[in-house]
Length: 258
Length: 328
Image (cartoon, rainbow over all chains, first blue to last red; front, side, top):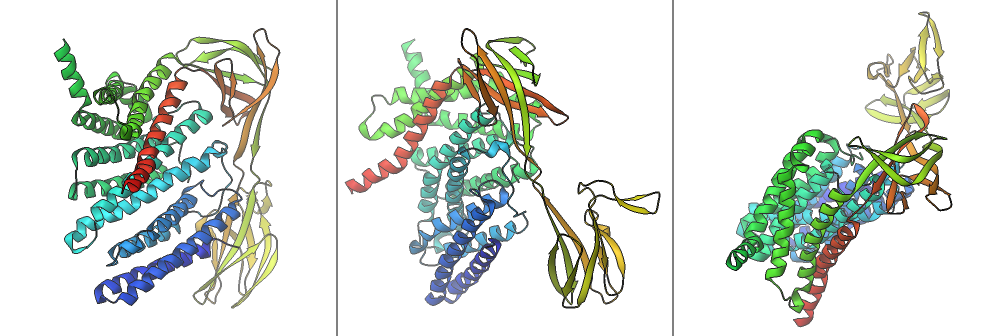
């Protein structure tokens, strides 16, 4: 069974959820927000089915190239987001999340979806742990970014503690990012003979790690709150995007698995 | 002297110093990633000032630990996490200063008990490596061909593997010939010059015309009939990439029995404190390969650092949260 239709259904459902969330906010009708929420669940189910079928089509864990990892990212993000829905009474988070996830799914249509065999360096059990750990972190940072962005544009209109939500997601994602970098380092030693080679992907992972490390130190040590941390969560996710896509396409790297 | 030491300890253990060091490391790493590899390795990552920053981060974290000693029970996860950092820095210093690397380039049948160092010296090995064979395996090539028909604003795709007739809403089109490596010899003779898909071409007959389409040349890949229906030849090649490369070596350690080992990417050989990695090969020399030999130091400290950082962080995240919930 082909995997692409499930991702296309997911895209359509998330787009519809975006419009209904917007309509729900503008008209203040609860029924529209409820339907938008149901659609988020349906979209996540569709992404789950698509991701399983993608793995079956590839005949391996589908973590090897940009398309597969983008699908992993959208799937993980949508699963994480489902846990936040009860707290999003007004529907602003749903609106922004559904819109951005639709964009990510639409962008995936520009990438070659055809599963390719693994290159020798990727044939390792570390692939599963390294990629999964990193993308759990990326998904958490994505949610943190949405909360941060909403905090910056919505201000006090939104009756929910976006600052805390953003912080908690960074707090959750940071250990996974750290473990992802460490597992990658141990794997690099096994495959290429060195833990760290200052390859652009490695360096940008460190940049990312340092951004969130500084955030957490300022937050926990100095009680930093408000617009400053929100900006860092936005900047941090911009660094996630560059580490993920920018390095693959713009910088020469050992990690350019397109 | 005691006052000075206390002042230095206070300065190093302050969060302001730590954050300043992180910011410098962040800025330097960012700049290094945008510069050419050779430039960034020479002027940034390999420079004294950059390594001094890393050293200072280790020292600053160590000072934090000393300043906060003895540790209270609830602070153990944070203590373990921070203890991992100086261990890691110490491990990397040891690893970079005391590890030796060399390469062994050879062809099948050749032996070596030395490795060539990047610094032009030689590294004597306590074992002899004899390359018995070197193999490369490629993924099978899979070819998919389609005729994309655009008729009355509808696009349909039809897969084919050989000459065939394709029916669509607007009629019928025939694929008459398929050539893998199309060439015109002597200005008129059309022929297939090899079995490789270097220049795939198909000859098709529509209701109004006959002609050749070439998948790799977009300007010649589409034909229109008089009714406005267009026919495009699409071609996709997958596979053919390197699936595996491996060296089978006969290893004779000094004073011990020889044995045979297969070395490949992700499967290095560990022998007497040395690690042998599959390093490179040359597509033009099928039985030639290059192995990399490393005598390593500092691995234990690095792995201990990694372990403590992970244990500390996940304990902070999960154990502390659970404890806090229990107390509530």
